[in-house]
Every structure is written in structure tokens, then in C-alpha cells.
Image (cartoon, rainbow, N blue to C red; front, top):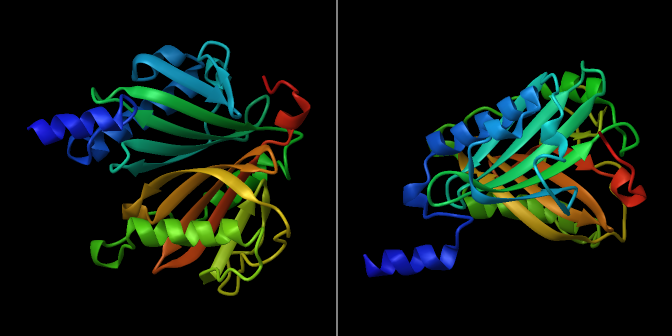
Length: 263
């Protein structure tokens, strides 16, 4: 019991022990996020006391952030990390008055409430933005549950993501490319849904992807990484199957550099 209390104290208020963090709790929190965004009502979020909020890596408030804007949600998908008690949610609003593609990392408190929300918001003016294209390809991909006996470990999933991120600065890094593998970058897709699709195209050189923060869900082979792309807020999300990269989704908030408002 004493050890449990010590570990809980070390984890802090933004996370809980895996034994106390269920997929049901995380899914309920992710569902409340989708509901809040659809209604433009942050009070629908299952928030813990003292919730902290950032948007495009800058401190903000729920009342002034993207969650206060009602959006038509055309697609949502969440990864549930029971080890860190965290979630990642991808939201696509392609058919509303102003299209958006959003990414949210959330961390939960010991009570099961959402203690921290980190949002990335992309819209017109951001890298390769095309919400209609993003929606089209995202709906065709399979990010479903992987059979228990075929799941990769957290370490393998993160290593695959790190190898991809590392190759931007070091071309000698060996990346576990899958075949097929497709990258959805803004609304641009590197494949056509065929067996020869490749993610190993158009990767720049000499760029360090740093300040990485991970949300990992072994049941679906997913890892999302919030990171700094040469100072630009960015998300790279990966689907890993059999240790190989299958899908990559990116969000790059170019307008954060200009300081333009999204709302």
C-alpha cells in the first residue's frame, strides 16, 4: 500500500497508475471531447479540477480555444493509452462553414477526469491543408483493433515512430517501412490505397524533430507524437503492424508561426 501511494505521488496529478486507468474511462473522456467540440461547449468535457489547456503549444483557456467553436464532426478516432492514462483524438470537420483538422492529446487525473488538454488546430493556410482530402483517405484506412497475439509492444511501436522522426535529421537511420505504407500529410496522400503504396517519399533533410510527447495504444498499434518541427507545432501519428509502419498522419500548424487566429 505504501509503495502504491509513493508511486502515485511520483506520477503527479496528470496521470494515474495503469491499474486505475481503464479503456472505458479513457473512451468516455474522448467521447466527451468530441461532444464538446460538436456543441462548441467546453463544459461538456469530463474535466478534473484545475485542468490546464494549451493550443498550438501556447497556454490558453477552454473558453477562448477551439472547443468553444461548434464544428460539424465528419470523422473522429481516438487512441487510448492506459499506461500513461492519456488519449489522442483526431477530429476532421470538412463539411462545416470553416473546415478544420484537429489533434488532441489529453492526460487524466487519478479521479478519472481530464487534467490536461493539448490541442493542435489546422485550417486553411496550414501545411497542405485540405480537410476534404484528409477525410476521404482517413475513412478508407483500417486503424482497428489488432489481435492480441499479433500486437507489438509499446517499445516496438515507439521505436518505429522514433526511427521515422529521426531520419529527418539523420539519413543513416533505418526506418521499418511497411509495404504498403501510406502517409496522409494535410490532405495529400502518398498512395492510392494499393499494395505498392510507400511512406518513404518526400522526407526532408537536416530537420530535427524534437520535444516529442507520445500517446501509445498497443491494441490498435498506434502512437501519436506531438513535437516541434523546426519550431512549428506538429503531430505525427503512426499505425504500426508487425513492427512496420503502415500509416502516417501529420498535422503541421504553419499559421502558428505567423500568429494568425484560426477561429
